[in-house]
Image (cartoon, rainbow, N blue to C red; front, side):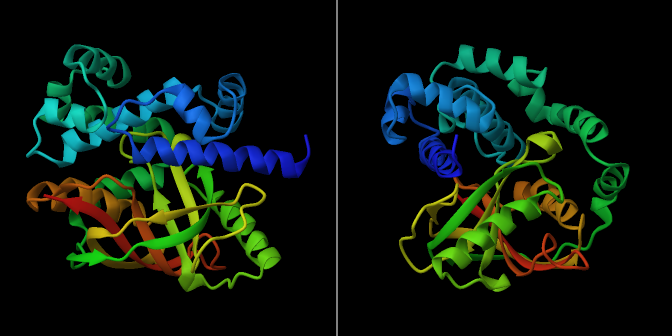
Length: 297
């Protein structure tokens, strides 16, 4: 298969993935998603599996369960039923069964700190000893000042990447090649990164990251580079600086301590960062950034 055909396939599946996450609380049908991706149902299922490594129903179920697990952890104002409905589960019984199968405990047990055991096992199995120790020491971190503010919408060109590790650099390199080919300005302060997964509960190799470049308008989608708009809305923001590996403990402390006590709950879109200095491209692996977490009441 040619590079152009392969890139086109990624772009079309990206459209379906974007639709899934934008409509995660609604019924999602594979035929509908096939239309979004401009494929026949047969080819859509095959191409979706090739691009993501999961069949479409598995992907939707996992995305819903992970989002609901986060809501149960970080949004104590929501009932379990409300949280499940926010994630597209219409039947309490089927939700409870699916949740227990995925996380090895009931939603009630999870909310009552059952997630701590799951999270600890996840770190031990999938994260480095150094990062495990950083997470354990996160309580002693001095939390940067958090500001609540409305942020404008931001159009971006993007490349999806799987894995929270140094290989994220490859996604930005691909984005840089695309920008050069299209005459799009490339500056570090125009780079963003979307954190689709919570590393407390998702193994590092399976975490989803989206490398982004801010653009002014429509783009030519090519070679697996697609386009989306990060929506406007209220965000909790903070400034952070450090070296490779320093950001995840800050995220951990924000989610585990600031958010549950803030009176806010998680919004419907991923957390993201705006870089002034990007650890994945910086020769000394240093970063300086604004962390933006969508919130709502």
